Image (cartoon, rainbow, N blue to C red; front, side, top):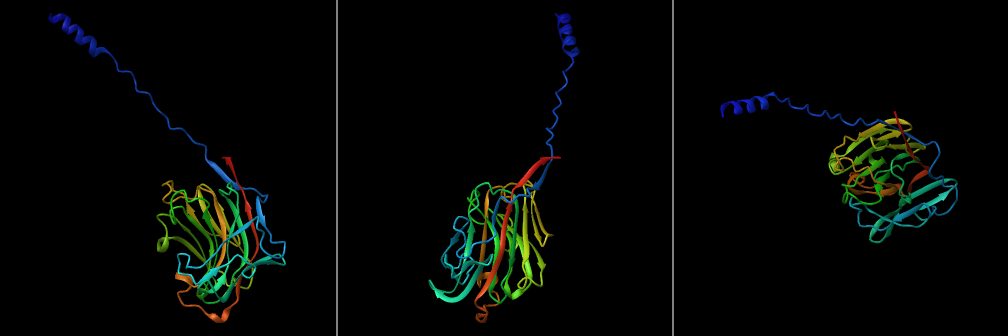
Length: 276
């Protein structure tokens, strides 16, 4: 009985283990993002009167808008109108709806394919303590939850008590409020001349440019929607707020009214994707 057992043992030991398969990671071709030279959506404000209702809608009412703002937003040409190729959003000192000021807050009617691209806005900003104009973007559908989880892109913000300092920011679940990612550039003629405010938005990053100079970069680090909710369609916002948590830090100078933000045009260019 000993010999067969030894033979079986030797046979077992003499077998060689088959080599394990080697798995190679799938190599993904890097993408290159650029922007179409043809404008996909535009408003050059070429028709006098009310802004084009096929391109713009309005947020209306008072109540502070989450920032303790002091204006009542209307949907009339008293606060937003087009003349001589320029959109004017004007804030006035007048009582309406329990508020002491009126203004306008306009939202673009971009189609759902407004996901990534280049947006250019040429604008001249109001001056005066208490003003808080903004050119910004919000998500069409709050897929990741209420603000700030679904994101916000502030292409331009300016507060009148800090004349000339223009801010580009993003907000998300991690970066919001006092922890927002922000860059600031001083533009001395921000209220006397038109300047170009631009965002280049791709799956890799949100980049901000003032007069074609890069001022802001926020990269997608692949950590998920908590820091990158910018993979859903957004739309444009144009408004002039009065007072509020930021604009009203040093109060409101009532001698400045009426005051206005003027917009020469809004252009949207689609993103183009190619392989390296």
